[in-house]
Image (cartoon, rainbow over all chains, first blue to last red; front, side):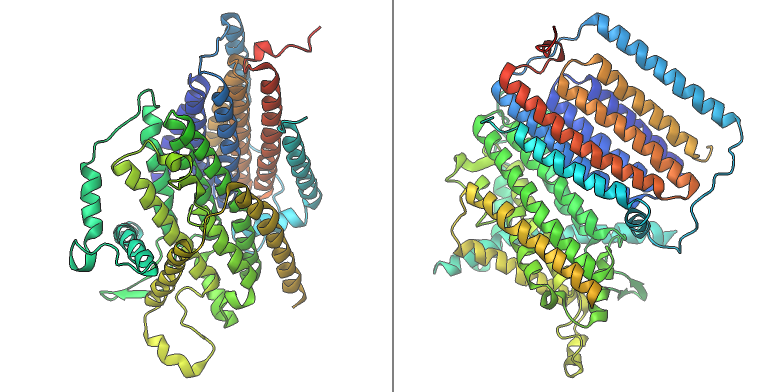
Length: 170
Length: 339
Length: 102
């Protein structure tokens, strides 16, 4: 009962803030709605039992990436007066049509798979009842070690690239 | 049923009241201590030796005119102090004051929520607190606060990295992210972690000074710089909220340093049986005492050290603390595997 | 009230994905396009977490963490590109970013 209420409330907030991100005129307001969206998504992760992922969502996404967006928005705002972007009507109709087609396709997949019984998927061997963080840590360092190292290299390259791109004397 | 809902709500009420009262009286403590350091007396008029000064301050701030700048973003202008204060307050949800205290025959754990990612929760709440400063600078619709806000938030996110490295060092040593678990690990190891990880403690404390915008890292809000920093355009109670948020952050950093390095509610020398008479003092008294030692240290450092310039500040954060932090983490991990 | 099955989370994820897609296709301000891409990545993450919950396999959450890491890298580099471009042409409108068209 409480779970249903929480889920529907969170879903309403997530979708509402998402629509506000896409439609707000002022870019700083868009960024703030994005932060609220991410915090609600973190709560959805807690409901799904993925507490480490929820904390990573708040720490990295809401507390790092969106701060980066906010910095860029403000640095850009320093140089130009705020004016509304002009949206061409022709392209927005095509955009809505494409998005509608995608939504129809995903809904068809969901309805189709909901009607059929789910085949038994081989689950991972049951680990001893460890906490969520320990489970993810074990997986990251044993089964998924190579993607982990590749991700760290990717982050290093991205860091160097971002610093070089944003320098003034290039 | 009752234990699930009523007890946590009661805990939250008591904790919020305690935090807000201590934060208001911290203003008085700071003014008095800095005054005594400078061989003067501080506030002396209101109440006995100025003890009721915070109440006078609160009344003054509440009665001040509430100015919103012209063409400032009204919603964001109102939101910024709230976004500054709320993370400082909700960080107290995972701070453990004692393992168990008996109230009216019920044993209650003196921690609001002992989640098993408690330490990461604290770090993520700290990174949300950065928004208050950026939004305050932006919403004032003026160049000086905007630049000061960007500077302050750049300082905060730089020192966050050093702090996170130190917290990871502690997690490597204790094997758990839960705050209560870390204190238990110190109890099992029979030694406070500050003796095993002195470098980590020093870096955490310096990072904590920078995270809370305290001297000597308080360039973004100093009066001589940038006409008052990111809260230039704020007056009255909104201005007070920024400062209360700063003091609440100070208490959080002190409590975290106490929990991680100084054994939380454990008595000094837990492995020396000759001092077991110290165990008659309740655990939360030890916790509060240790936290107050750190708060005094914060104020003492503010009264003593000169201010860092902004580029020196950033250089310290990136070029000194982070390499030291990484070295500490590597050495800790290697020694933990070998020993 | 029907109990919340993983299908509810999948529908939420699909709806959020579509909202992000509308943002990418319709808005002209490039920073808002980037933020809509982040919305889409979040929708994918909700999907992964829901399946991880249903199949009791933490690999879904591990994948979601990788998505977060890649999104961070992409945001950093993308915003660097935007800043570099803005320094040259003073515009954030995607329609004006066509100096390499022939």
